View (cartoon, rainbow, N blue to C red):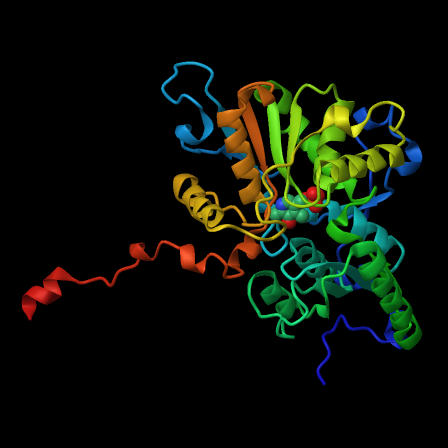
Length: 398
Ligand SMILES: *Cc1c(COP(=O)(O)O)cnc(C)c1O
């Protein structure tokens, strides 16, 4: 059977390391000055690999005024919303996970691993981004993907993120809807052992969402970009984003804390609850040696009322709103994360404006574009805009 060039056998492994094969090199990482006085030096990563297209642009987010103001007719106190397009960190490599992978995959390359193992839902953006990046760097991706129900067809379809898995030849291992620590992690470890025994390959395991104390550096460095490229402290009072596994929100909240805490960071949860995300962020604070200085509850506002029917599930109302956002602003949001974050942000702006520190708000678009193509939107698309063109001159001739 045809084997892709990256599928190494034992004999190839010893003559050719993954970093040499792909030509993309890891570089030494130098942390910005503002982290050094506080963060424990042992927690600073040694290496980074450049994967994201940076810096990402900041643009006006032209949400209709009646969505974001309780009294659109008032002459003062209006919200002014901008969007940082972290959905534009690349094309097939897009969204927030790319920034985390710059540190996680550099670690894997430094350890000369051949295989990347991770996990997520069937339409996980993290699993897709990790698989594409692994191929880019000459490593073999293995993803454990959770079916929503045990009886889904075993090909898992070819829509959205799954299309890209099949394009890049991700080894997809379908599993029932298991919990991470007790269900998925033991399977990832078993696969690692098996690949070592049967093919002599070294595997690197990345946790769900890439959210650990190495992945968090992706968004500590994004904070550096917000600070120095986007002038966040001069231009904005509040930042809003979606939270799914917690790494992105933790990185931004901790970066803000370390540089003066002048903006307020709000994270809209799409699963779990506020307690869970505070615990994750507190763990990151402890891992970075900041556990005695502050706590998540002081540096991160979690909006916990916008999960709707639950993770990766939508109401018809939400899907209609998804379409309205695209038509009003030209910015597509994904149904699982950024849609619920925009819903939470706009609802709070109308009903609870005091939750915001000011009126100049920056929304972080964390990506998810391929999840948008999983077909759930099809029934809600505006089919009325498509018509057959009748050329009047042709008709006049007949
Ligand atoms: C993973 C993801 C998030 C959540 O980021 P976490 O760091 O896991 O909290 C938000 N938006 C999109 C599109 C994602 O794929």
